Image (cartoon, rainbow, N blue to C red; front, top):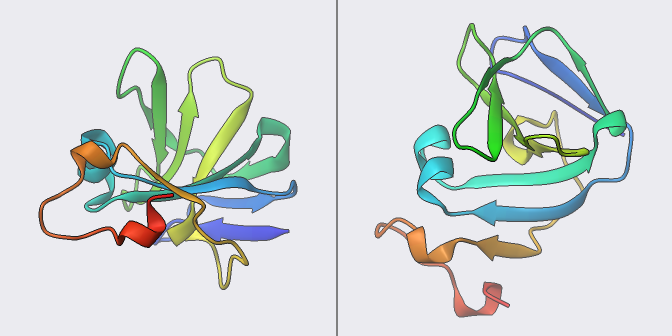
Length: 121
């Protein structure tokens, strides 16, 4: 079980299912939302209990992004109508016990960092 929160603590969550797919997304939307690349893992909707009311921004025709309306912390990503929810690995309280398994949308990555060839799979 993992717990996490936004910076101010208004939004908290508890992950009760085994997280999967820990990945770093380098797409331009994730970079703009997070200020860098977005590192997240996913669980079924029923495996993430959220306390508080996140605000949601529909960033595209296919997905929405959840954040704290008070402090602005980026917390969630969800495909519209999807059965899973991604949660920010950076918002987890303490150690996650997870390791990134992939980097996605690397063609959009920022020019100010390098992804080692050994991590590209």
